[in-house]
Figure 1 (cartoon, chains in turn cyan, purple):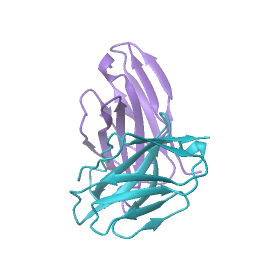
Figure 2 (cartoon, chains in turn green, yellow):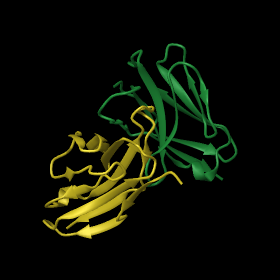
Figure 3 (spheres, chains in turn brown, green):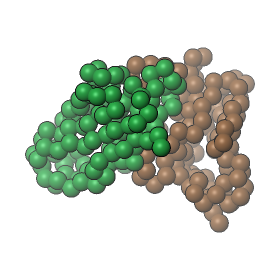
Figure 4 (tube, chains in turn purple, blue):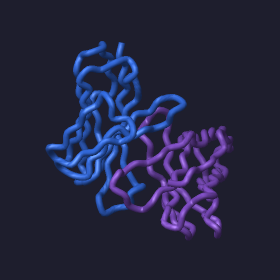
Length: 112
Length: 114
């Protein structure tokens, strides 16, 4: 599975959009981009995933560049409860190991 | 409510005293996994199971055992715990035919071995 690079930390003002970047320049054609978040020592929470097209759900939007070498997770109106470590993960759609490789992630601090 | 539950949430024990951390999911998921999370090392997979009676080693299986006698339960067994197994443990599950990266995690079990 491809390696990802994320900034260590970011700040965002409450009510503003939080844009979290992820670089995955070695991504393969059959690999998806997944985003999770982990609020202090709680279990990681799935947010969204995508392959090529931009995706949106009730939590966030995912923008993937045309060459698929990078992506951005957008939280449209960040709240204090969105303060968490956000992980960008690249892996194949299926696979028997069920393994997710979590990197160091981005600590998003939403400021009041 | 669809969820993964773990018990206990916190446990302090002594070296060598066998313990079991339970994991249960109510979503009829085939796949289940155990991870441990340590500072600076991220989450690492310990064991996984693709279905009842089917289990396999992850990246850090030494010192752990698992069983999958029922679809909903996937207990993690430490036969002789040691201090290096002090960690935060997470159980996760997903549908076999679903998106492999879309997994549901339990709330975590913080284990301290003295």
